[in-house]
Image 1: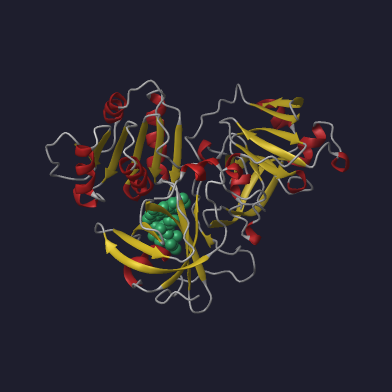
Image 2: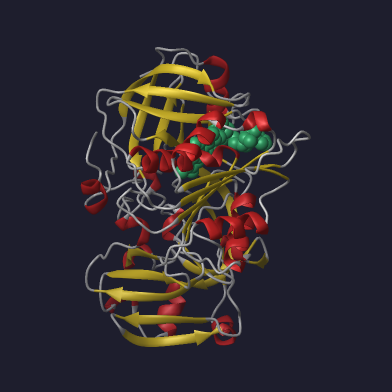
Length: 204
Length: 256
Ligand SMILES: Cc1cc2nc3c(=O)[nH]c(=O)nc-3n(C[C@H](O)[C@H](O)[C@H](O)COP(=O)(O)OP(=O)(O)OC[C@H]3O[C@@H](n4cnc5c(N)ncnc54)[C@H](O)[C@@H]3O)c2cc1C
């Protein structure tokens, strides 16, 4: 269905190499999308935990978390509100390294699903397969600088191959769950998985 | 009228299928804001605060899609009303302001959104704070309240630059006269001739306005806040609210 009178962007910058998912447009800025106010997180009381159901498995304070192996990731990111940003640069701890520091083997993880939690009560659900083998990190730096609170600092989950609402800001826990339990946006009509290349924006 | 309480309880009316729609009317509400009515055969009722996605397709197949909040959710069956602010070089907004004509074809998805919504069965007092076009979903919430004759206390703080930028200016003043539980205040950041009536205030939305709204909203329940606008606006408003002890805050951010 053609929209008469619409000729596309004035200064065409469409990438045809398949990097831009359908329905997305490129931005050079870094828009913010959050369901509530930006929480201020103190590093002194900051804690990150891995849980199996309600059982705590391992937790780190800010110092011990920063002792974990550090990795960098240059990647494209995609927000469900239709902007994408190419070649963003992140640093932090790969979920793989976090899990192994918690004593897990990637081949024998306790369940197939996790909920990522945030200090403000936000949560989002993911298959664990979307977080491991180099796919995701707990990011503490963006563009060589400590992550600002607006963008989820001091630490956020980063799962770049899924829409950004899956990359929980102000992350403080990963919780293994038996089933795929809908998180905050997922119970409010957003898709359970959120693959931008399949345009999995809304559920139902 | 459609019974929307069932929508809230169940799937909150989400939809993931693009539907053909045509532009049924285009009307400038202010210098920079265009009201667009889109009609579609596959219409679904919406909850106040929800948005639809609109997709445009160029002849060469290029597509652009953007989200727009519904300006009204009590409109006639079969059409959606949105209000689009003109942005210089904005791909989609400039199409609607400069090229669109009644009868043009677009596609719509939704209505969607299950967080920034309000239903008249709610009785907690409500504080709505909108900057510029960020007022759009709040206007649909105000309309939901007045239309349903709900007595829930509600206060709208509406920030714009100039008097002439206010959407539904006259209408909002009339509504506050007719509905005792509704108050509306305007903050005019650039206006040089601010009317000397109690609902008009020079400058940005500041602490004393929020304090005043808090007074209007006293019943025993905690105040539910809805803040919408660009990111800078939302950040400064949520900070003010938290300083005043309000932390039940929903936000919607339209841009940087
Ligand atoms: C849930 C939700 C609800 C919304 N509701 C509304 C609503 O009710 N009303 C409304 O008006 N908007 C609303 N928006 C915003 C809307 O979706 C669009 O983002 C907005 O209309 C701008 O789209 P555009 O295509 O016109 O601009 P875009 O082309 O996306 O450009 C966005 C901005 O970038 C600037 N820009 C464009 N190209 C460049 C460039 N090359 N270099 C530098 N700057 C550039 C433009 O001038 C513009 O300011 C909503 C957004 C969300 C997420």
